Image: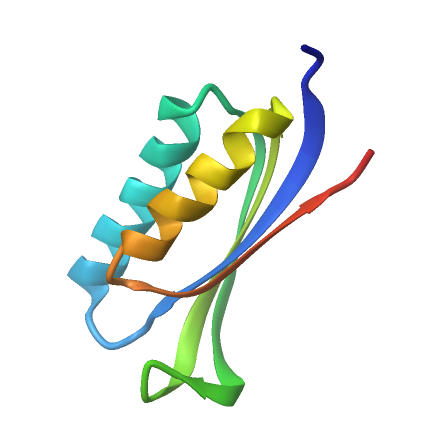
Length: 95
């Protein structure tokens, strides 16, 4: 199966720097564990959230461009859902 290009926007809790780093590392490990090839990473910084997420009004945004097979996307989403430091995550296909 051919790999497609995807992008992930990840919003992490901004309350504790150590937790934020751990959550980011877990998210990257999840991508790699599921066979995704990360081609671009950007730190978009801390921003105010429009809606509360897990009772928090601020989050730290990260962007990832990656290549993956489509079958791995639900597994990646599942991994991100159980990561306690992730406030929001959105994966979109670019191709």
